[in-house]
Length: 246
Image 1 (tube, helix red, strand yellow):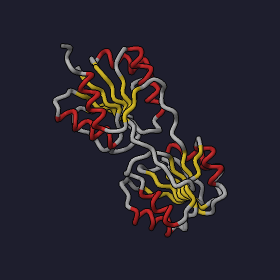
Image 2 (tube, one colour):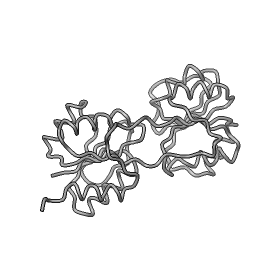
Image 3 (spheres, helix red, strand yellow):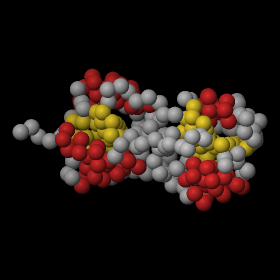
Image 4 (cartoon, one colour):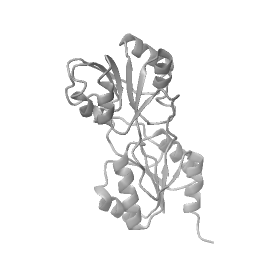
């Protein structure tokens, strides 16, 4: 019997190490949207499952005993598919999700990227850090603005002429985030509530420099799915779920 980790996050990689150290059979699954991803220990599959039915079939065919959904907080599609597939296949599901960020009350919180784009359009020089898959939502409203875009992988499409693209992979330091904001005279930061420490430095730097911060709220999690915030809690849940009956 095997545990499936839906991964792509630092928490997923840490969980894979912890479970392997405890002798738990596991396989990690990555969506394949990032080139040269950081791979976890143990067996790894890359790519989609083919929707809810495809995932449910995978669970049955591979004797998956339980799933930990440790995907990014904004990977709403796979989380919804996991909840539906586990219900169909009668497989226990846990959501491992890092806590979100909290501001000092000066941050502007919005429900989606379109609203974020509208709010950011009043800025003069914008640091856009919401991921390459969201850029199309900002291209129209911010077409004439100075925008600095940071992405992990090279873009496969054009951006407006006034935009500058920076390719980099975190973690980032407060000093490097402060420099990119000062060098580009940033007055508005747009990001999403990824949570965690890996990319928090930009928020610290923006607060120090008085840069306006716009944050896209996380999508709602599938109803009825047990959720924990730490790897230790996820390990305890897995060990209980794979324990042999007495």
